[in-house]
Length: 394
Image 1 (tube, rainbow, N blue to C red):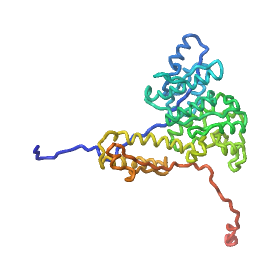
Image 2: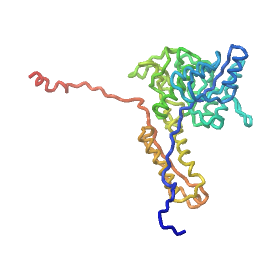
Image 3: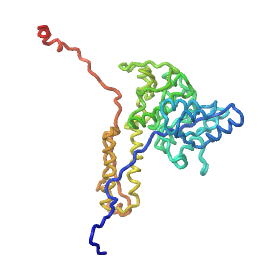
Image 4: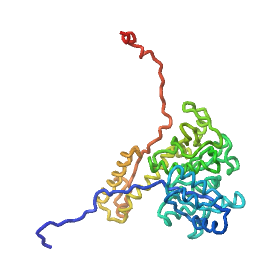
């Protein structure tokens, strides 16, 4: 059509702007009971129905007030609320008549479209629009439960915080040796084992780890480990832990050497330890920050690629996708969240046949930011600073 004038065409090429993703969503498994009347029980059931994921998106302390006067939910929410007011997805389970029954209730099951216990966290994204990535079951995290929490975490790209147990797998460890032995039962990069509990007991340390992890994610980022950040609301420990910053042979040093995170008192109570339970075959994921960085990048890659799915494969499309990804990675480097990352389209991995089938292959390499875990300082005695001493007296 003839037109004497300006024709404007809107173009959607070029890098896409990406919104920031939040990793500070807690998945909390807990029990809750009330000694009140039928009305109090009805209120508890309405606020936290059994085996249903419930989203707390406001004041966690207010939610704690609705959690009844028995069970683990109220104390856990209070401990989390001391650290932050994050999104918390609560799945309330019923306490069993014995340990195996309680474990079974916490672990839950999947029956068609019904999810119970831990499995209900898998339905949270569909039902609530948010996905838990910080997972724990304070005071309920027996060894079988921890194994299942890790299985769920792998599906959610989440991370589990659990207390060290004794030989029976559910009673809290009473000393460093039991804690270390317990940690050796696992080979999961998605898990951090913590010992001891706080003086409050009942899994209080794990609840505070969940809250502090969310607080760090929001204030600093997922690239910062849980370690060496003051906790709020802790007045003592269940078992004392000797710590000395320059002595690796202390109990705190021994626990960290065996990949158990502990709690120290140094200008306040702090978690002390950066290590996961990664197996020897996964040394690159020894740091909590490396695991959570990898998971965060996987979420970001989904966000990068999703708008391009089903679009016609052209050189312009591939360039746009690469630039969208690399622009986001450059931003993460500027923010200090990663040391570096880059997205590539390798010619030798993209044959004409694969491209014709709609299967281009991209490669991403990245370097997470490691924690300053063990700085080495050489202290040298010298007479150098006496040089010219006499001249200073003139």
